[in-house]
Image (cartoon, rainbow, N blue to C red; front, side):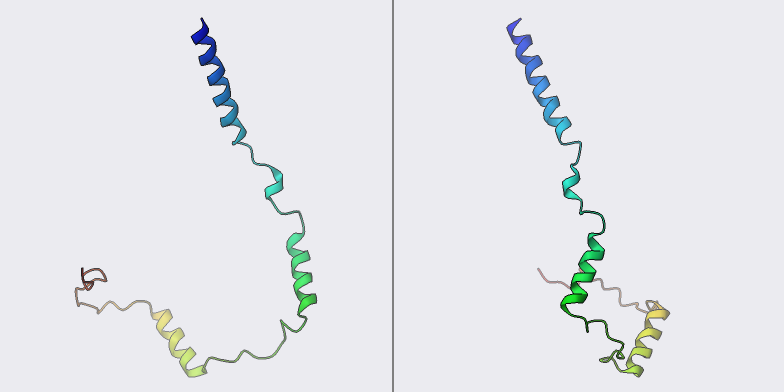
Length: 90
């Protein structure tokens, strides 16, 4: 009889421990509107971050060639038969 009570008590403890992890607390989620407040704070810290100046740093001809190559997709003419793994040495 004593062993049965111990088993029931252990079973109850395990059920309480398992059910306690099923429900997430609301403290883990950010409060409503926090993304807007963060955006306003970052604009206050650096108001010139989102200027209307043109983007510089990439040549137009290179960008055009890059986009053409991207839109064409991967080439099907690669018949070398080598994979990335086969070129590796042990």
